Length: 328
Image (cartoon, rainbow, N blue to C red; front, side, top):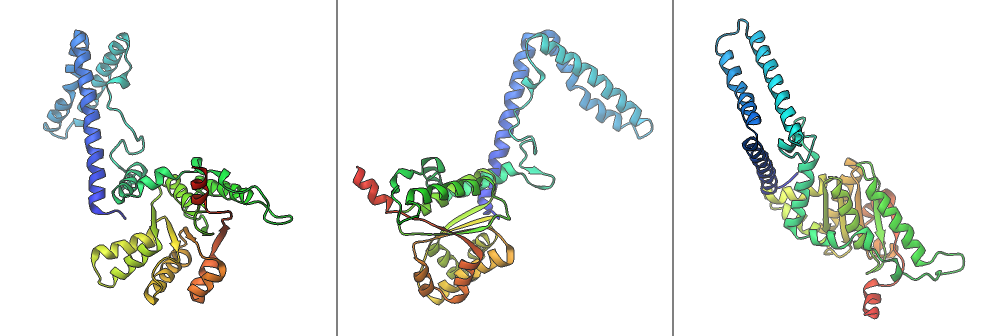
């Protein structure tokens, strides 16, 4: 569900690009026909068949099918001759056709009565560009997640080091994004500040968006604010909650930083319950809170959803931001 102004903008962009490519193709035709008289005459002949079909249809239905078939046969012969001259000039027939970026919808943006994946992908990207989050997605990717900031010293006898844990987590998240579908599991990222939860959440979001899925990325305080506004029953605010409920992937960052109120807690419960249990839609939640802190912060209903319906990924190590400062 896209905002009207975003959808109108990307549809306008599609129309403008298609028109431009048609103009470029028409210019190529003019240039080639100016160079070759035989091609120009064949081109005039080829373009005359459209009006001929219309003229025949106005003469009545009797014998129309045969008359039109004759015109089409003549058109095919002229087109074949035109392509032969093009070939002799060193050009393929594709050279004079408008460039098509999406073979499914022929750059119309719609395929089989539904929004094509190409238009959907552009609308999603435009939505993020307009919201300012696009810069975050561009900056935080899988390929620049630096494992060297994590200690390679095991945290105890027989235990893995933070680097080993995070290497496994990075691989898991990359596979998750590459194989994402509407049946993918929901994830709960738990760990202290500066351990890469937001980075990997952003990397997943960017990779999933590239595959034309609808992703909503919001912080917990922003989600609480959206639900708060819904109480005023504004149509625009209601759209905000529907986007949260219906997105193909929701990423909820910084759970536990939202205001500690009954309204906020209720909003979080409604969101998780609707998406995970009712709709079965994948949701990724990150939090700086420990298990014990989660138990104190949220009631049993929310906690049971978080710990019972989400696959938990623990982030270990020291604050990367502090480690970066020490390196500078």
